[in-house]
Image (tube, rainbow, N blue to C red; front, side, top):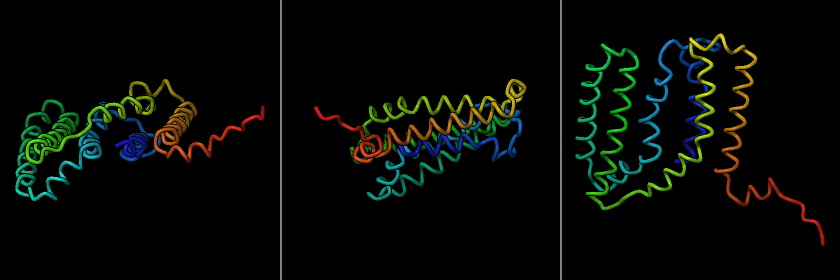
Length: 191
């Protein structure tokens, strides 16, 4: 789960450049890229529950899950797109992605009596908050109402600062301790 955070941050970092083109202005809600990421991030955190259900022979259960959540997605799109537009579609996708992961986690506990250590997942989220807040900070510079407040040079500096933050996150939390000791080796003075 922790390995997914830097990748997630980089994708969110370039989201507006990929969707609209470099240097573009985003006119929709800033929530859209975050809502679209809920399903994939839940798969990174809890995707093993579906894999374990598959490997233990519960294929029909997984098929029912997929068909049911597809129906939920279509229904929510029907309800939410007319009043909310693109935000409604992203919200429907987020609810469906969240729903399939929660359903599989619950089923895995009930069917196979296998659970997750949720405390470690919460700690991963807390440790990644500086990176995620940095992404929000950079994304805000793309929003139509705020774009005049940031010059291209300031946006470039913001991106640079966020990339440094992502790099430090990777070094501190993802590298093995032995490798970190070699990088940050302190010279000990003789007594």
